[in-house]
Each structure stands twice: as structure tokens, then as C-alpha cells.
Amino acid sequence: MRDYLPARERRAAALNLDYRPAAGNSWFLRSFLSRFSDDEVRDRLTVSNVSGGALAEGVPATARLERRIRQRKYTQEIQSTVFGTQQKLGAWQLDVQAGRSSADEDTPEALNDGRFRGNANFKNIAFTGGQRPALQAPASAYDPASYSLNAITLQQRYSKDTEHHLKFDLGHEFPLGEMRSEMKFGAKASRREKTNDTNQWSYASKAITGSLSMASFVQEHQLDYPFGQIGAALDPAAIRARVAGLDRNAARLATESAINDFTLNEDIDAAYFQDTLSRGDWRLLAGVRAERTNFDAAGVRTSGSTITPLQRSRSYTNWLPSLQLRYDLDRDTSLRGAWTNSVVRANFSQLAPGVALASATEATIGNPDLNPLKSHNLDLGVERVIGSDGAVSAYLFYKDIKDFTYTTNLAGSGQWTGYTSATSYANGDTAKVKGIELSWQQPLRMLPAPFNGLLVGANGALTDSRANIARFDNKAGAMAARRISMPGQSDRVMNLTLGYEAGPLSTRIAVNYKSPYLLELGADILNGAQDRIVDSQKQLDFSLSWQLAKGVQLSFDVANLNNEKYYVYQGVKAHNAQYEQYGRTYKLGLKASVF
Image 1 (cartoon, helix red, strand yellow):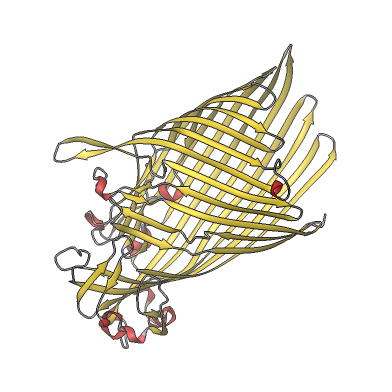
Image 2: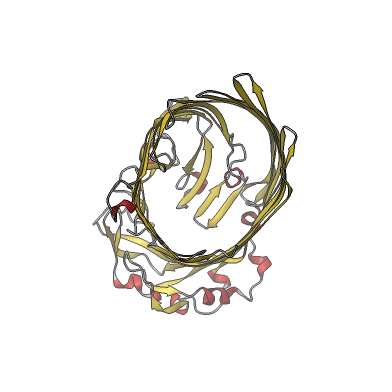
């Protein structure tokens, strides 16, 4: 059972400059700076080592209880600068852009895990409720004197991600009799590097002087936990004070400090050519894009206390042709079709070699050998404009996917036996996604006042996804496979909006719905009972703005008005894997325009 107490602060600034000395000649500068800090305290009460190996609902057993705390503050900074120009060179249009962006995350010293273990296993431990378990425990389970300090782990982490790019686009329009051709080509070079450095220290209770009773490390108040009782709040300052004067070098964990150190480089060179042909009600766009990727990963591999360097390098080229067709049935109705190809690379957190340890029982295992996802896509649709600002559309879509990335949880198996979470990544074989997407948006201006200010909107998608995964089966002595839904893909998604606009008032209320979807696979990817599924979600949001004066607007927003839960179950809905509630988010804003 986890109770979070975060304090977050965001600051951001942007500076955009434009200079237009003459028609067809413009220069611009786009810059952005953001700073975000998150100071979080997480108190936990964990149940483990159950007598008999499992805890059944409503059946008392003997178990180990632990109180644990994590306290860390990290700061993220993002900087971005883009400089460019647009030049009209006769019949040619030239766009040139150069940019640099960087992002870093600094965690100076986190109390990664302060662990207090029960002086003895507790009897009569039980729970009720499968989706949101309520712990039943004797009064001694909430008495600080029943626990003693077991270990303190500290962690320091710094990561940085930088990217430089340069690109140009050159276009020209050609009349071809009754047809018109808009030709365009360009190129882009991108250079990106991400580095990470981690250090970790651990202090066993025998190295710490003074009273080890948890009563010496608690605050005066009880945790305000809505799902049950956890006990008195732990004091991170008191825990840190006990190790402040101890030998840091003797406590440093060499393996844990090295396994998440890495440098990743991703260089992408791309070029494209496209031509758009127009004649009457027809419009055809055909083009191709080529991308050359060079990827290098440098990290370490650990085996026990042995640390060895790990290098991965690969280069590959993707050709991405596309064809798009549009036909206007009349002034308000259009038919559209598109055949496209796409590539999506795994993100750096998935590609990072080594292991990121969030705590002594939580790990993320990177995979630098992940291939990028490749997809062939077909889209067919019809759109119709309603009135001056309404629209209705329907689209059919089909995707043929190879090498999709899926997440698997290795906790409880192999070297991760004692872990509650050990997340890793792998490539699936093939997947197919098909479905229909419908959308309708319309102001009801035909109604009598004051109802003519109403706005209605609805959109949704029905999707069928199938993916194949496989592994070697030792018992069968051959590869074994099974079919799953595409990870992260809901079968049904829907958004409903009701709004009102009149004079200075503009307001919206929206309902967003997602059906259940596969989050991650278990350690045995062929066992569907280990799959972790995110339950359906329905979220209600509200927004209101009022124009106080010309150039001055007051806004008020409420997100997650219904306090929707985030529930993950394992195999069947009654088996809780994660249940969280975040409450409502309120935003009050004032915007003023002086130009």
C-alpha cells in the first residue's frame, strides 16, 4: 500500500522573434526554456513471505510486514533553440532550419529505500476485496515499536539528452496544361546523444549506531491514506541523519552504480521527394522518404560482482513511400485514401543497456538490441463539412506491423525472484490493426436563442488488433507462440463533448472513454494468466473561459472531475496488480495580450 506526497513546481519561458525585411523574405528565432522539479515522499506498507506461499482472500495467515519510504527530489531542464529562414527565389520556395535542444534530469541524492522490517512475522494477516484489497492486521502492525531499521539505500543520478539538427525544404509549382504540379524535396540531418550516470550506496542496520526502533524515525502524525491504515508517517530527515557521517566509500555499491551508466548515440540522415498533382476535383500526392540510422550504445554488463563493458552498434536504412488521393464529390464532401509506410524507433529508456534500479525490489532492464517498429498503413475515408464550422467524417484504417515493442515483467523469475517489478522490453513478431473511426462536430446555431450557443461533438474508434509473440519452449524443444492484442491498444475509444459559447463565455464538458488494453506481459510471455491489463477508464473534464476585456481572458479548468481510478489487473479482473487514484486537478489562468 503506497501513499504519495509530491510537491511539484514548473517554470517556463519562450521567446519568438520574426523579421520580414521584404515580401518572400523572412527570418525567425524560436526559443523555449522549461524547469520542472518534483519533490516526492512515498510511504509504503508491504506484505510478503506469507506462510503457505500465498494469501487467500479472507483467510488469515502469518506474514512479514515492512514499512518503507522513498524521498527524492529531481529537477528537469529543457532548452530549445531553432533558427530558420523562408526565401522566395523566383518560382522556388526555400525553407532552411537549424536547431539545438537539450534536456537534463538531476537527482542529487535520493533516499531510494529506507526499510523497516517487523521484529517478528505477524499473525492473523488477511485481506478483503480483490480489486482494492483492504488489509486486516492486528494493532501491533501499526505500532512503530514493532519494527526495526533493516537498511538504508541512497542514490544519485544525472542524465542528459542533446540533439542538433539541420534541414532544408525546396519547392516549386509547375503548370502542366490542365494540371498543376507542386514538387518538393528536402533533407535533414539529426545528431542525438544521451548519457546517464548513477551512483548508489547501501547501509545495513549493523553499520548504524543508535536506536534502530522505527519509533525513533517517525513523525507525530498518521498517514492520511484513503484505502486503509498504514501507520505513522516516516521522517526522511531522521533517516538521512543516521548515515550522514558514515564512510560513503565503504557503502558504495560498485555493481549497482555501474549497471545504469551508458552513452547512446543516434544519428539520422533523411531525404525525401514528393509531388502533388491537381486537376479539377482530383488531388494526388506521391512521394518517398529515405532514412539512414546509425545507432551506438555503450554500457556495462554485470555478472555477480563482475562488470564488463557492453557495446552495441548497428546501421540500417528505411525506405518510406507514400501515396495519397483526394476526390471532391462536391463543395462540401471529399473522399480520401492513403497508403503510407512508417518507422518508429524504440525510445532511449528502452534501448539503454544495463539495469535501472528504482529500489531494491524494482528494476528496469534495457535492451539495446531492439529493432524499430515498421508499419504499412492503408486509410480510406469520407469527410463532409456541415454549415460554416461543423464537420462529419468516417475512416477505415488497416496497419501491418513488424517488430513492435512490448513490455514484459520478469519479477519473480530467475535473478529477479525477490523483485516486485522487473520491467524489460522485447520485439514482437508481427501485428495487424484495423478498425473504423467516426467523428461529428457541430454548433447548434439553428436552435432559438439562447440554445443557439450550444456545441456538440463526438468521436470514437472501434479497433481490432492482433499480434504474435514467441519464445523457445524447453519442454517442447521448439519455438512456441501465442496471439495477443496489440500492447497499449484499446478496442474502443470514445470522446463526447458538450459546449456553450455566447458573448464572452466559452465552456466545455467532455467525457473520455477507453476500453481495457494490454499493458505488459508476465515473465512467461506464453502464459496469458500473467498478462497485466489496464481496466477501462472514463474521465470527465471541464473547462470555462471568460473574456474580461479586449485581450484579457480568465480561464478555469478541472481535469478528472469524477476522480477516475487507474486499475491494472493480472489475468482476471479480480486479481489486483495496481490500483491508484489521483484526485482532481484544478487550473486557474489569466491571459493578457498587449499587442
